[in-house]
Length: 555
Image (tube, rainbow, N blue to C red; front, side):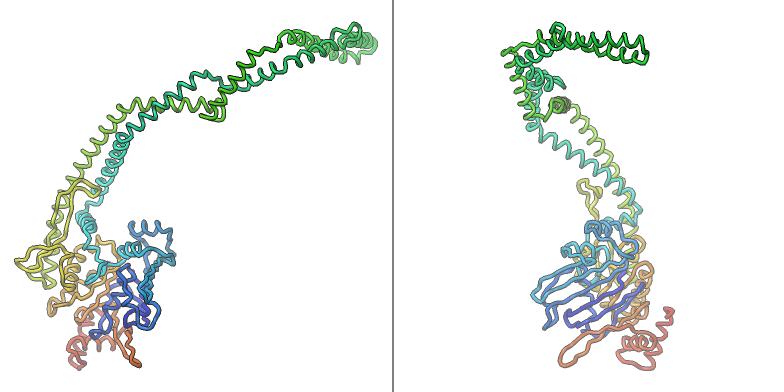
């Protein structure tokens, strides 16, 4: 609900703050006191059009703040706030609009600067402002269809249609992309085939690069390897009486004799024997290795070419042989997927046809339920219009079958024939502010439980209304206020008396400067204001009548 409206330097308003309450809030006052200006300020802070003309003379800017208390935001409102990364504290939502004297405008939501268009979207979720204003959700075709679904209890059916159409659109997009990309994908697949052939032709082995580089290192150093192995072998085995293995044999025999004397040395004999055996193995390996290593320029050239080939492939496909082979495997998979494309496309087209069939059937069934409910709705709203003084007025829901979309196959327009013999017109084409307000009141009372907008504002609702009709309007407003915070500007005592809270709007002129003030009226002050509304003056008769009117509403 709207808790507080703070207005500064707006038209003839210097500064006012109004604390609204739940239920029916009524504003009364002399003509020209500024009641409609207050609603104009509310329209502005809800994202309405701005003009430098509304800035009070001799000031830099006008400012309007609206504080809302929203314990449980609607799904639509929450999505808007989430998109702005705004979290409400204790359900408090603050909208601000500033208009500079040069006409420049700035909008804030909870202190965050936002585009005016976003402010308007948020405003649409908070207030329906009926009269000569833009914030009237019922004038929007999409909102009318949504309300009709609420009235018809077809929200679940509508959600099913939306889900099916969403799946249908997704798969249609995939099919279109597949068909559009065929030529480009064919070129890519041809290139992938070329790359796979190149990699396969290299016949790479996972550990090959290290092995090739190691072999090249050996061939390159063949002469030095020969010298080193021969030298090592000579020192170990070939020096008569001076070779390492001869010395070890002498030492081993001495230890064996020592161990026979002192058995503690037996383990050393075994250890030295193992070392002697390892040394013999090493000598055998060196002798064989010397014969194996030979400088071969042809083999070296072949090894260099292989290393160069691997390097080229690494630059193209990955930083290791493993990465190159993985690239090859992925390319093969992509080629196979493309080759299976026709089968996959046929499967997708079959799935698309199934989604289309299901969505079409679901949308058709939804349309039938909507049209049946619309007939009941038309009767209820027409009856409510009759009660509100629009004799001969007729409400109709006009349907047009359109192409399947997320909302089904229906375009639904609420239409009104205000007088007998008139052709029904779209609600947004109804010219009279008072007339549209009464139409909205009739619709809102029928939709009371289905309408998610928490605050309803009615301007000019009493235009051309009096007597018994005024009592009906007051009764309807009072009923509506049980489920929605309702704010109403009125000149009728019947409506003013029905209010749970009553504000008096007046204007004063001080030193040649006019300003508007607003104050709540209660008790005797309220009785006197009702008496003024009854006959333009305060008398014993009008005071008594006013008191009786309040008592009839339990005030």
